[in-house]
Image (cartoon, rainbow, N blue to C red; front, side):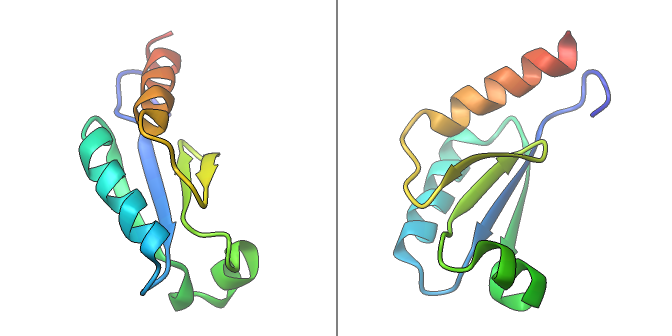
Length: 88
């Protein structure tokens, strides 16, 4: 990631997943400082194989930071750490 650019957050989800809906709301609140991409795993057989039923999965700058249950503040802390790495 180039210096000074916002972190990139990927949220891997499935349709009809209550935990995914909750994670999406949390990302909407805490992920404003990131470029957010929401990916439906069911649209890609490779992602179905990789993530199976352990969604939601959140990655920041390619590093998995959470799966299944996402705690309040977890996304915010990961983005803060990523911004520090980008500036350092």
